[in-house]
Length: 90
Image 1 (cartoon, rainbow, N blue to C red):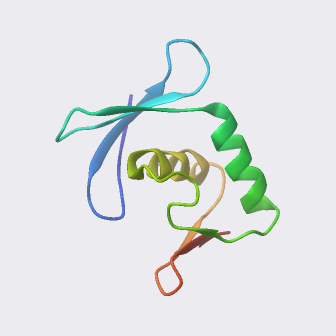
Image 2 (cartoon, helix red, strand yellow; image 1 turned 135 degrees about the vertical axis):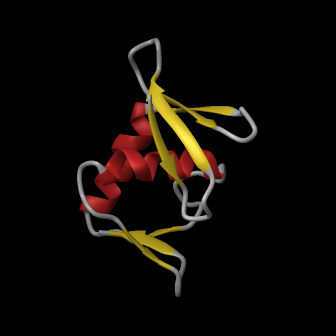
């Protein structure tokens, strides 16, 4: 299990899903858990590597899912968060 903080300071734990596909992220202060699919991570990776700038909440409207996808991908490459135009890019 791994811990990370979102840009707003919320703390999450993330671990591989028991099924072997995807991940589970839990917000530590509320205990709420979300599933992050492998296909969402792959699609987001492909979009970023293709040079697309992704708007905030374009990955997922659920903040916990979006922040988890970004955390997973930041282990592979740097992702910039542009607060002026509210986008993520590499």
